Length: 313
Length: 249
Image 1 (cartoon, rainbow over the protein chains, first blue to last red):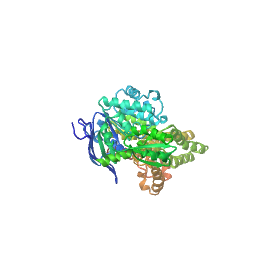
Image 2 (spheres, each protein chain N blue to C red; image 1 turned 90 degrees about the horizontal axis):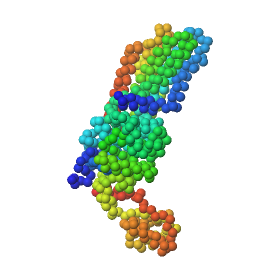
Image 3 (tube, rainbow over the protein chains, first blue to last red; image 1 turned 30 degrees about the vertical axis):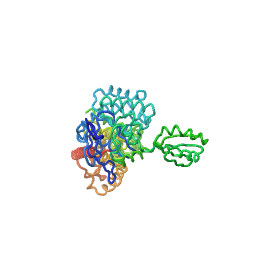
Image 4 (cartoon, rainbow over the protein chains, first blue to last red; image 1 turned 90 degrees about the vertical axis):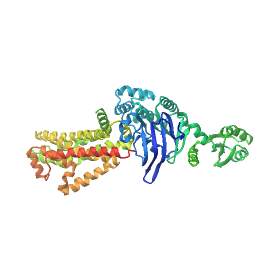
């Protein structure tokens, strides 16, 4: 058992002190970590360096410093390794004039699959795209394109699957389906690296997280450990009411409330105990005769959570 | 071989959408139509002058370059612009197969369209004069020029979104301006390389007429074809090297 939570015991992907800079801009800085079988979430706010990291793992871009090994080799110089690697990029990456079936079949041909038709049908079925498989990709919604890309990545039956924000644009049903699929593929012993800026998504599909902020490794380990590392920062909740100032004053008397600010009639409340606050606010509002029209955790503050993790290192 | 066929086929579809096929198809037929409309009632010598006017003034210096550079710049340029390059390069196939098949796809489409244009003018001339021996030289010349343009603009399309603009500047400023003034540079002009192939295959009477109107000092057919082969090999090798060495995203 390795003591460094950023490293795994049987790695299929190894990243050793990797940095990448584009001119003056440092996109990834001195990252050392590894990935093994199962689903690992690559978590970080937009612009953190996740996409750069995934592109380096595939060999699309070269690290400015350090070394990357995928199944023991650097993919750029050993393209045969691509038979075992699939990438679902965040950008479009589909041919609009092809149907989904043609697209997946094209991927199968280039991946060296022998029975391309059967493999394409299997992959399309896996992502639940059968009904739309013979429609042109130009007419696909973003979510459907994501599923087509996942099918194209899966069609060669790769051991490693790298997915850059794969749930972007998918509806809730598609999202659940894809999360189940990724979990299943991970359980089969494949290495899945799934990038996302949404903690909840990562939490639902992966047991292990690598968090990246400003190109640096901010935290690594299982999801519970990351959660607990975040536990000492207060939650922020947004409350909309018809009597904002009165309610703000009353809430400040509550011990579980650390601070309240009023912004254009909207309250921003800080607390350590989100559940307790949720239970207490209606009662306090009733006392001051205020009507609550919205109670919403400000999970957009995730970026500040990431920054907090960086400062904590 | 399966990958080469697949990428070439996909490239043909990619660079020749329905709209392009219609526009370029009509453009390819335009010189022939102009010739048919203007050459009626001309006697043999005058018809030959009019025919060569179309070939030297419209087909080679305008139609062939514009079709070839737009098609060629799209072959790799569209992959980069649409983000599909990663789809291609993250496959267990050599980069030389990718660059070779992108080149082949571009050449098939550009050559096809330009061969159609060349054949149409040749047939129109044949209809007017009963002389059909210029059809093959025109088709060969159009194909040779298309190959040389593809050698330049398939790689350039990878480097910049402005490959077509650069191409148009190359054709109108360099080829049709500078090279026209300095005939010693004619081997650097792809459409003139194509015209060399054409002039090397036409009957002596037509070749003499070409010399009369100032299209002289063109290299022979053998030299033209070997130049084309060398440029093509260099282009594919350079594109392969770029795909191997450069960051691709």
